[in-house]
Image 1 (tube, helix red, strand yellow):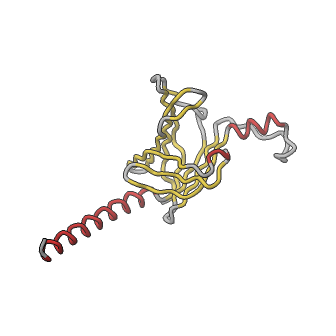
Image 2 (tube, helix red, strand yellow; image 1 turned 45 degrees about the vertical axis):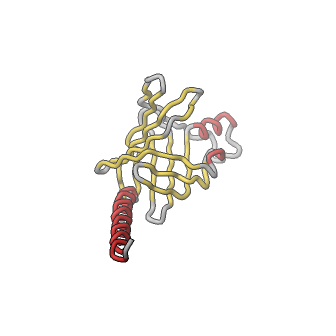
Image 3 (cartoon, helix red, strand yellow; image 1 turned 120 degrees about the vertical axis):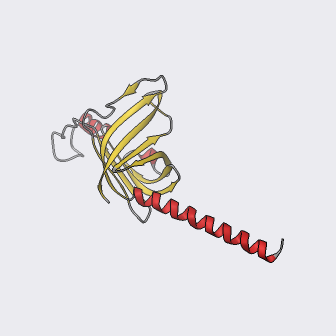
Length: 169
């Protein structure tokens, strides 16, 4: 291979890498911001669809920062306050219900193509810490759709889809 051919190949490779990083940066930049939960659904392997897995009006937020940090919180609809303001002395049944109807985690994230991977560092469910939570991403206008890979809930495999609406860019 002569110097001219080698130089041309290096230039093409550099341009290709530049276009790839520009495309990735634009997609990643589209993810950055704070999003409010708009809808949630589960699709079971048997074809059944649960349109309200967290109740009819759950509340939730997800935030992606430009420095590759993320955090998410989801609260089921109809959560009841504890009978006392002290979460340590509240009745165990109330604390269990509060725990079962709220999920949160935070950590770093990486975005590649149509997937975002949440690298969990802290979570309301300790089992999630030091795991990677993979989500399939669809961005359309002010809507962000995150779909899970198949996983078991209550012994039945399902895919969850959470749709968020942008509130802060």
